[in-house]
Length: 407
Image 1 (cartoon, rainbow, N blue to C red):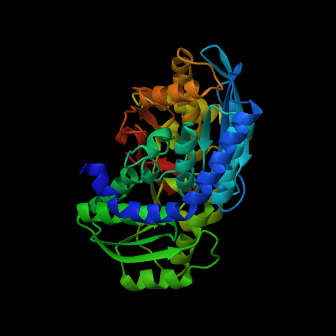
Image 2: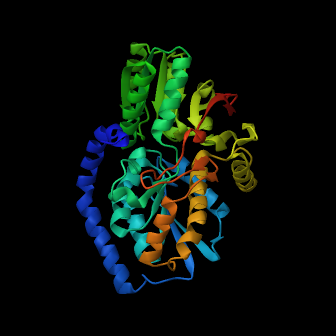
Image 3: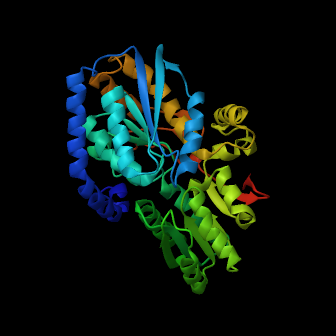
C-alpha cells in the first residue's frame, strides 16, 4: 500500500459514504448533461477556450469565494494565440448547487475546464462530475482528499491550495518548538473537519504532542460556548482551530472571552481581511501557516514566488483597494496561471470545445514542471495533482491586525 493510501484510508470511508448517497443522482444528472450536449450539437470545436468557475460568493464560504470572483479580471485573456473566456457561477456554498453549476457549465457553455469550488464538501462532490464528463477541474479548496489517493476517478481533478497535511505539519512543528506537550482541536463538523482531525492527529503524534480534546461545530453556528468550555477544562498547552473563512473567528473569540490565554493556531483557510475584521483584537498573537503570497513583500528576494506574488497583490489592490488581497483569490489566480501554461500544449493536439482538447488539457496540466505561481512552485505528476512542496508554506503571526512573517 502506498504512503498516501495509508494516510487517507480512514478518510476515504467517510468520503465514499457521502459519495454513495449522492452518486446515483450525480451519475443520472451527468448522463443527461452529456445527452443534451450531444443533441444540441454544442460539443464542437470553438474559436476560444472557455473556462467555467463555480465558486462560493454567497453563503458561509462567501469570504473565500469573493476574492476569487474579484481576481477574474486579472486572469490571462489568451494563451497559445487563443482567446480565453472565463464564465463564473455562484454555488452559494452549497454542494447541490455546485454540482448543478458544473453540469450547466459543461452542457450549456461547453467549457474546456472548470475551476472550483471554494469549499471541500462541494469540491468532493465535483470529483464524480469531473470523472464522468471527462472535463478537467481545478479545485480551490484545501483538502488533499480532492486529489488523493490518486485513482481513476480523481484523474480529472487538480487543486491549487496547499494540502492540509503540509500545513498541519507546520503547526505541530511550531507547537513542539514552543514547548507544547498537549493540544486541543476545534473544527467543523463536516468533511473538511474530518480531514483536519485526521491530519492534526497524525501531525501531533509525530511531534510528540498529546491531543487532549476535540470539539466540532457547524459553519452556521452562532455559539460554541459549550465546546469551548470543554476545551478549557482539558487545559491544553495550545489550541488549533481548523476552520475556514469568518466562521473560524467564533471559537477564538469565545476562547479569549472565557479567559484562555495560551497560544491559538488557525490554518490557511482564514487568510483574508474579513477574518481579521471579524476576529478583531481577539486574534492578536495567533499563529497561522499560509501561502507565501500573503506576506509577499516580506519574503527574501531569493524566494522564487516573490515577483509573481507581488505582481498579483499590486494588481488586486490597485483594483479592490489597499489591504484587500486574500490567499483565496491567489489560489484561483494560480489555477489560471497553470491553465495558461497548459493550454498552448493542448492546442497542439486538438481544438477547444472538443473532448480531445479536454483530454489534452488534462494531460498537459499533469505534466507541468517547475512552474512558479503566487503560492509556490508547481511540479505536477500522474500521482500528484497539487504539485506543491514546503516552499508553498510560511508561518505568520497576527500583530496589530496584520500578517507578520516569522523568520
